Structure formats: C-alpha cells, structure tokens
Amino acid sequence: MEKKIGMIANGVNIDHIPQGNALNILRYLRLERKYPVGIGLNLPSERMVIKDLVKIENYHLTDEQIKAISVLAPHATFSEIVNYEVVRKFQLTIPEIIEGLVICPNHRCVSHQYRSKFSFTDVSGKTIAHCCYCDHNYDLSEVREFNL
Amino acid sequence: MQNLRNNGLISLQDLSKQDILDILAHAKQFKDGMRKNTLDGKVLASCFFEASTRTRLSFESAVARLGGKTIGFADGSSTSQSNKGESFVDTLKMLNCYADGLIMRHPNDGAARLASEVMNIPVINAGDGANQHPTQTLLDLFSIQDSQGQLEDVNLGLMGDLKYSRTIHSLIDSSKLFNMRLFLIATPELRIASEDLHELRRHGISYSFHSTAEEVIERLDCLYLTRLQKERFNGAIEGNYGISLSTLDKAKPNLKILHPLPRLEELPAEIDDTPYAYYFTQAQNGVYVRQALLDIIFGA
Image (tube, rainbow over all chains, first blue to last red; front, side):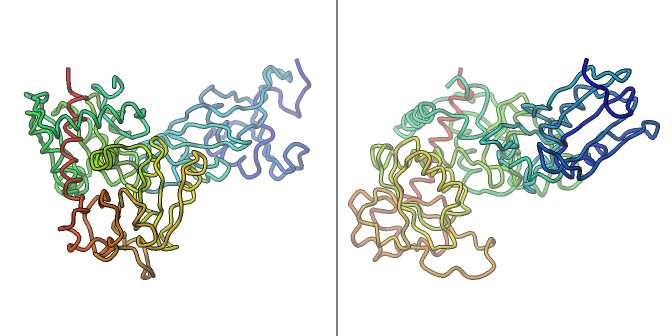
C-alpha cells in the first residue's frame, strides 16, 4: 500500500478540494460530534494554486456519499486509510447523474417543487451541469447552491 | 415514431427530423378530411395550471374530433394544489388514476418532464414555463410547409421579441433541420439571445440582422411575428417592432404572415383581409397537428 497520511489511523482524507468547498462537504456529511475532523482552508497547492482539504477520523464514506462529494469537490483526491495504510486512493470523477443535491439556479424550474436531477459532461475542461427538468446548462464551478 | 406511441411528447428535442415530417404528413391527412375515432372510450386530462385559450381549446377540439372525452381545468386557481396546498407531484399521481393521458400546461420549466417521470400514462407538453411548447412549433412548421409547399430552403423572417419568445427560440432551433434562411428583424434590445446565435453559427444556418421588415419583405416566403412581452421590460422599447399595410407593398405573392397569437399592435387588424394573412389558418392548423399527434400516441 501507499504512504501514511498525517495522524489519521483510520478514516478518510479528501485532498485537492476546490477552494471554498471544504465546508460544503462537511455540511453535506452532517457528521456526529464523535468524529475528529481536520480542515485545511486556502492551502497552497502545486496542482490547484489554492486548495482545501478535509480529514475525518474513524469514518468511512458510502458510495453514495463519494458520488455527492464528487459533485461538491470535482476532481478532488480521495484516500481511505485503515491502520495508517492507504487502502484506496483515487481522483473523484463526476457521476453521470445525481439527484437531490444541486439546486437548479433557474428559479422557474419545477425541481424546486420536487427534487433536482442533474447530468454532467466535461466540455473543454469545464464540467457542464445539465438540469434534466428545465434543460438549462451551467458551468458546475459557478453553481453555488446545494441541498446540504 | 415508436418513441411517441404510448409515450407522449415532452420536447421537440425528443423527435428526429423524420418524426417531425411524419407528424406533419399525418396532420395534412386530417386537414384534407380524414376522420378517425382513435380516442373512442378514452378520457384525457386537459390540465392547464396557467390559462392558454388557443392551446387548450385546440387540444380539446382535437380530442373530441378523435372521439375522446376530456376532464380537467382551464387554470390552476381552482385546484387542490392551489387551495389546499397539495403538492404538484401528488396532483399528478391523482390524475394518473383518472385519465388515459395528460395534456398539461404549467408555469414552471420542466413540469412536463417531471410529470412523465411520475405518471405511467402518456404526457403531452402543452407548454412548460419558458422551456418548451412542442406542439406550437409543430403547428408553426406545418403552417410554413402547408403555405409554401415545402419546409426546406424557405426564406423565413422572424420579427418582434426574438430574445425572450419561446416560439422564436424553438423555430430557430428547428431551422437547422430544414436549412431555412433566417432574416432576424428586431430592435437592438430584442435581438436573439447569444446562445441562439451560437447555435445558428454552429449549424451553418444563413442569417442576417435587420431593423425593419421593409428592408427584406421582397425576399421573404414567411414572416413570423411575435408579441412584445412588455412585462419583461422596464422602459419603452425604441423602434419598430410591428408591420402595417404599407410594409407589404413589395411582398412576394407567396408571402404568408404567421403569428402565434394573441397579437397586440405589432399586427394590426387591417392586415387580416390581405392574402398574406395566415395566422388564423395557422391557429386552425393547430387542431390538425394535435389530432395527428394524439392519433399517433394513442393509435393501435
């Protein structure tokens, strides 16, 4: 397995989070107070210039949570640690479709009365979020509101 | 047209060019006098959560001409959703129990797509907010084809509110399928949206900008006018966004004027008695197109 990460014995490390999105991840996860959490905001990064980082001790993410975090922190690096060993590490990829997470910026969209459904495509280095109801397209980096 | 049969119609994007041509050909058969009882014994819910006189009545006329019956409401103010706080999805699930199909107009974008997901009866979008109104576009295309004898290579003038009009947006979207030449006639405030312009360029559609209809009237086969949606503007719009009798002095003999109606001052009543006026025939065509669509969706 790979190198040891920080002081985490067991848990998850989410690195290369776009600046400003770490707190969204924690809001989404709604962790119980028993889990120690380390947050790094506005850290220097070779890959991103500035990044955020989240470490959560004694906590493991479900596939559904990883899928949602892929939207909240596109292309972040996810690591799972067990007994100081990195047992899984990969760059998050945007899911094809996610329901209920993204709030459609179109205020006339019917999803505000139900639940949202967005599909994603990468176009020229940008992730385009497509509302499956009102058919509007958005640059995901400009989407600011999520159901957290 | 297997994708239409038993499925309904939510967006024009769900149709291929051949699907559109097949629907228009079928509509022509109805216009030429074909009679069918496809909807005999069927009940269709005609639910207009916002009022639309022409669309609702032409749909209900089409259902009746096919032998079916309609239930429903002409605006959303008298529903349990409006008066008792029932959710939109619950209203849809309830309608699913009462009807064989749903014809729906709704003020919210995407409402028809949502309805098609939570219901297992065919849903026909009769307009969802600023998003889609596929049967309007189909009847517009039918009207161009029926008045000109062809859809390909037509010189089409689009005039009025090119920026916000849903019908204009859909026609621009369709023009790429039929290689139409577009003449975009609008004041600077009402010129087409940048996304539409991008689409025209991407698909190699020929277009030009003009500020009055007089500049291009002698080249047009069809002139499609739209109402200025004044509620969208704070100040008055400068310039000319309508026509008059004198506009038509140099019109080609085959010119037809189209308008989705209702009209305001952009299309004065003095035009009605000219051979160029086609907008009431266009409204009538709406019945044939909707008959064709319903016959395809509910036919055996």
